[in-house]
Length: 301
Figure 1 (cartoon, helix red, strand yellow):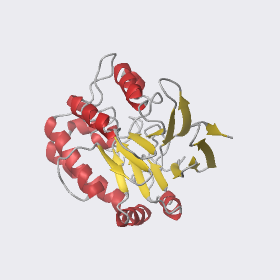
Figure 2 (cartoon, rainbow, N blue to C red; figure 1 turned 180 degrees about the vertical axis):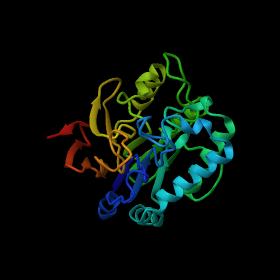
Figure 3 (tube, rainbow, N blue to C red; figure 1 turned 90 degrees about the vertical axis):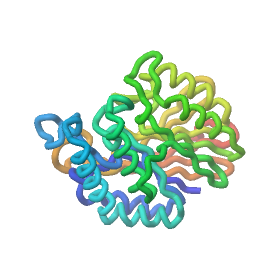
Figure 4 (tube, rainbow, N blue to C red; figure 1 turned 45 degrees about the vertical axis):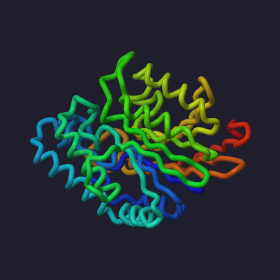
């Protein structure tokens, strides 16, 4: 099975997103979008028309209008539209969100008014899944070899801290049940990384420790993340071996400049087999490949 994954696209900066042609050419069975599918705000304050936090100023009507227009623009990008249509034909399009498509940069949980959060969740579900409903972002989906679990690290999150909550009680119950399955592999998807970037799981030590304890119930777990506009492949030690593959910056630049310099073109492809897992991380500079032995769950040379 082939699983493509990517995060972070901003049509205002990268109007022609040819990276999606490469993803489509790989002929994946499934596409996982790992947050920041649009950018309600972005960039350096003095150079951006939508500097960080600006959507706080919007009325609810204006917030919805702008978010709707941004989704429409991204979904109408010809290369992205072709990929989305191909994945929908396979029932293979799934996503979670980050801060910029939840509300604004750094937004989390109750720092965003309830009616704004509802509008955001409805529009996310409409554009990703085709139904404008105020339904949970977190979910799981099964394939013959793997259960894919998508987590929501925005809607219920507190401000970071030693005992701060990230997922909320109901989502923890969901995750505990979702990890009980008979597939060979488990893929857990998060809009934020474990310990990289300005926001990550390590900023919620109690939640991260709980996650690691739960994940040791499974032998073959791969953690996927976005957010940081970089590709990364790392092994985390702890209660069990946990590999994290990050691919972020599919169609956005690194520094938030208001023009298309330094287009990242980052995306990942996982190939699952009974004997091994192969992870390829693509960028404008080429490809980095990693192979994990399915028996030892160790990275192979």
